[in-house]
Amino acid sequence: MQAVEKKSLTKPKNSVKENAVQFLFKYGAIILLIAIILYFSSISDAFFSYGNFSDILRSISIVTLLALGVTFTLVVDGFDLSVGSTMSLSTVVTASLMVWYDMPLWLVLLLPLLIGVAVGLVNSFLITVIGIPDLLATLSMMYIVAGLHRTYTEGYSIYNNMPLTSGGTAPGQLSEAFLWIGQGQMLGLPVPVWIMVVMVLAAYVILNHTRWGRILYMTGGNAEAATLSGVNVKRVKTSAYIISGVFASMAGILFTARVGSGQIDAGAPLLMEAVAAVFVGYSVLGAGKPNALGTFFGAAVIGILLNGLTIQNLPYYAFDIIKGAVLVAALAVTYVYAKNKFAKT
Image (cartoon, rainbow, N blue to C red; front, side, top):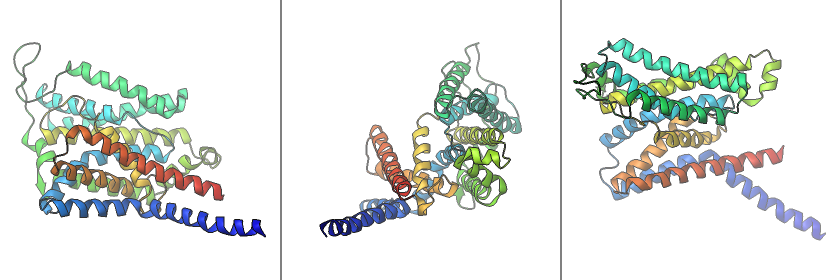
């Protein structure tokens, strides 16, 4: 009798806990976003304005592109830590093509994208052919690519009319047409925002409404079952890492156009934000998997939070604490939910 009573008492408690975890997993990110907006709106009149939210969207555009690349690798059960370094390399290469070599715009846009493809191919070779685990392979590439871009620039940022180590000044300049990509406006919104929206929608359609997207998710869910179904798992993973490299290069091009120079190590600080955005996006409306719309939502949460803290004059060196806390919270909810779901099955 006592055992029955004890069991009946324990069951509701466990049920309440499971429901709470499920609710947080499904709606926690949305509640957090609403709470952030309400809080900062109450302490600053400048926060809840069209101009400020336009700036927020512009600021998260680069992080979102990086995070979309990470999303594709997570879909196939991988992980790309080299996106920050790839972005940095593309940033300085983009600037150098115009400033050092005075190349036409179409080459300036094409060649950095090919660099992203090359990094993705090397990553996939290390992972799918040699067999190095994703984290270790992309960690190694992160350092290699970082060394390449510092060696290429000799440790200097690239800007208009810069002095050259060989003597004289750089012959080219970042053109107005190129700078428009990062600084221009179109239909009342910054051009980077339009680029971000197009890429997010494209990624969403590919992952959710195409056969190839289903194959990507199948590969990440169970590579052995995918192989038995006739899927070339190595080729699918290779494509995911190439896409990740291309997105990182796009972020580098956009960053160069936005700031008007090629900054060394531009992508390094954005890696954590990109990873946090992806994992926050896991739980948006209970998706439970890497997805394009969730990634955008995660980037928006982090961008709005950091913008509000900036308005509050919080020291910039404290921002990493906030980013880390958001990432820990997202991971905690995701893994507790996954643990409970696994225990049920």
